[in-house]
Amino acid sequence: MRIAGKSVAERVTRRYTIEREGKPFLSFQLTAPPLTFEHTMLDRVPLPVPPRKYVMKGDHVAKDVNNRPISEDNTSDPEFRKKLRRVSVLQTIGLVHEALRGDKEVSWDTPEPPPGASQEAWVAFYEKILEEFIGTGITQGEFQVLSESITNLSSLSDGDIEEARKRFLPSTGTGEKLKEPEPPGT
Figure (cartoon, helix red, strand yellow):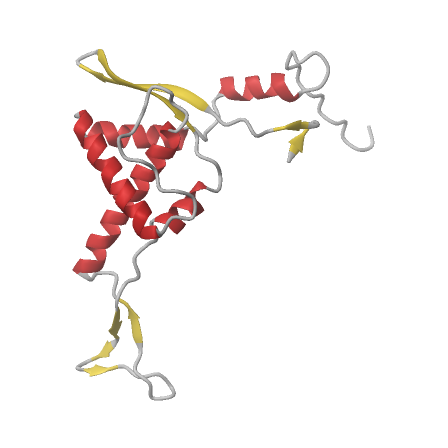
């Protein structure tokens, strides 16, 4: 896609610092993940499938018009809920890992799986990355704020809009505002 003849492939980056007692503790260069990253994460760490349960009508299994038992997803199953929580953690780890990919000061002890790696390889990788995060001493709250900051990178501030205007408007690049079109019949 092009806007005003220019590619818009540049991704938003920001420096994020975790402070403790008013002093910098950890500092990261965050890059907004690409639009397709959610699909990438679902391929790498898929959502668990809930078990099925029969729908009960009184003390009997409910039947459809063809006299077949009716079943539904059992999303309250404790084992399913445990798996769902774990997937959520690993997908968040994947999001943070992706956002830190461009930070030259961040390195990982765990090698990334090769292209085309299995879901099991990606899950194992994100488990190891989680262990590495735990090793930094970062707290649950700090990690949550970090992941929320990554999500917010896609939101544009007034400054971001002004910078985009300067880059994409033709002529001088001064960011002059476009003229509103005249209403018809004037």
